[in-house]
Image (cartoon, rainbow, N blue to C red):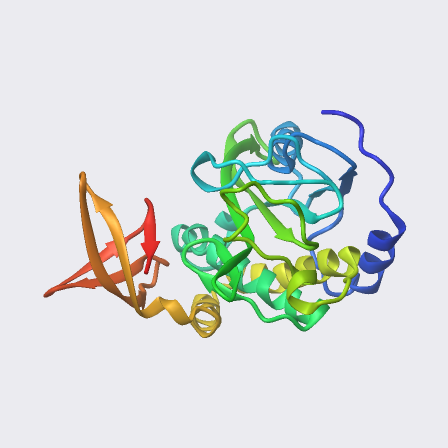
Length: 276
């Protein structure tokens, strides 16, 4: 992995202001002016030694990616690209449930952090997007990795949680131009990227504590409050080559999207969902 750059003053000052709220996160913060992928850098870091709470931040990604391998447009100065190493399997509650709800908890946390930093309220769209006015503001990608256990020779699973937030308007590719937005576009004024970063990490620390303590209902309740489309919205999805349509009916206890299709309730856990 390439050597990191100095943490810009705006980020250092912002993290200092939330130091009492970040808990186990941020013991290691690496900043890169340009890097292929923050998730890849965080994975490499975690694969070499136990690094729960380590944070990788980039001003620009040259090979950023989103869900299902899609390219994440990551121009310099226009966004916030962050990855955090987490270990949800240490949850005091059901470990499989903690892992399943991590992305949802992160969506709540990032929305809360953006609102605290800027006043902008973002909606959550299952499973991993934040939107404003139906246009994408931020995305989340969680990837499991194998890391050395401590102590002992065995190996345990960790998760690299990456997220990207559109901060400033940018020359989006044609396929994104009418589907993306940014904080500064929505507010009509500049915002401090360092403050947005620090506040999203502080909010993530709080929701991660909920996850580790088994406070799953608190996470799901907060998610539903910020996800108006989780009930009563029409969606379609592919089922073994056939397109099916139904109406959303919330989430189950594991974070799967429930969709009513005629007399049946389907449980969607992966795959493409198209929202009407």
